[in-house]
Image 1: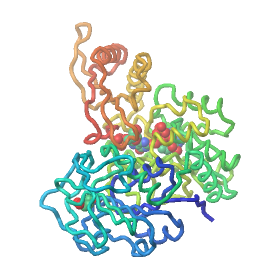
Image 2 (image 1 turned 180 degrees about the vertical axis):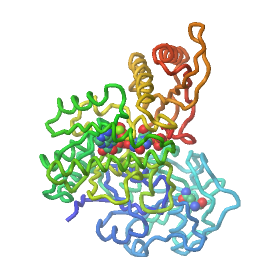
Image 3 (image 1 turned 135 degrees about the horizontal axis):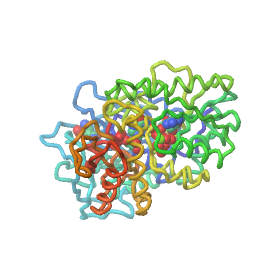
Length: 519
Ligand SMILES: Nc1ncnc2c1ncn2[C@@H]1O[C@H](COP(=O)(O)OP(=O)(O)OP(=O)(O)O)[C@@H](O)[C@H]1O
Ligand SMILES: O=c1[nH]c(=O)c2[nH+]cn([C@@H]3O[C@H](COP(=O)(O)O)[C@@H](O)[C@H]3O)c2[nH]1
Ligand SMILES: NC(=O)CC[C@H](N)C(=O)O
Ligand SMILES: [Mg+2]
């Protein structure tokens, strides 16, 4: 039996990079939702018995041969449907309208004009008003299906919003789920509440209850090992799983020698002081650093680290008398960048060690209760579970640790150099009271040597880059605009105090086009 909340929305995924944001907006409207790839939407529909359906965007093109379609059963169900971008196009096509490739697309910010009242605009938009939305399309609907009317237009899309009130079908050419459509969350809430009639009683407390029941159902009476890093995701996962299965759980902290200064001791004592959950501290730095010798390619590093993590977990599973399950604090951004969530056509950016870096053959099954969440939602769940701020407010730290902050070969010596520089940088950030204003900050040790002069001597040492970003979910990020005084104070301290570094630079690249980590 799976856990079924009283009301839910089915999101049909056609492979858009932002499908998860639809789920997120639905959750923000207080309603449970599940994403199903279009190939599995029919089964999900029968299982979930949703109150409404949302069709996502897609990189595919409706007029192209073989492009995906929504299962007919969804249209036969009599349920309300909201089609977003490709979703609008495919719905129009399947109901008898027409979609054509446009001469020019609309990408990024656009403005629409409201032409008629519509339930989606309740309490929000009125006729004649212009509103900012975010578009990303080349194709467009050129003839809508019978029963529809146009309720908003934009320059590039005469069918910016269409409505069939009798059937409760709605379509937007723009993406209401992204933050660049400022009223988008409210539009989705109007669909979910006013059109589908959901009451909106879904909360983090509900999520907690559902996940606990799911974990119990999945795990049964087996033992579970949980990879605990000290980061917020695994701390939340561990506490949640412990609430579900109590002493069937053992946490394992893998000390791979790639942690920051003093971090291993800190994590272990912090966790042991706060929780009565068995925690094994595994010092395997020789194994990791030995295996990384001579490896310079970023993906090769990630794959080696992902596999070695699993080797360590599997060995530990035997130690606790045989654990069938491995729990990890995997989040949605780890998933979308590593592999396509639905097996659809989104692209691999980097193999996060806990997803794309996993070996192909694994003996243990995964328990990943946070897999659909974004970082800020995990923090909210952590607070719901009563985790202390010291866990909840921590900056993220990637599983592969310093290995992906040392482009080129990773050696113990270079890790030591980087640890010192990173500690100074973070100490200065804390002293300046900036830690909580920054989403993530760290130093990177570059494989580049430059010439300097210190005390009248020539130096020839490495360059250190500093990175600090603001973000809400790690999917996009902006640089933190330190003042020049702060940066020069940090640079001076690093060059003076860390042997091996004679130059410091600041990374001014947002994500995209950069990523947060350098590898
Ligand atoms: N050193 C480690 N020992 C054991 N497990 C780890 C370690 N590093 C990462 N993991 C596992 O990999 C998962 C993903 O790592 P990730 O860094 O994304 O999450 P986190 O460390 O829990 O939180 P944060 O993102 O805030 O650092 C973790 O949730 C944890 O299960
Ligand atoms: O656990 C992790 N395993 C990984 O392999 C990994 N790679 C990146 N990150 C973290 O993810 C967020 C986004 O990072 P990127 O912009 O570099 O992809 C940032 O917070 C990164 O620190 C990782 N976390
Ligand atoms: N974002 C989308 O869903 C785009 C749909 C389709 N690929 C187009 O270009 O119009
Ligand atoms: Mg981490």
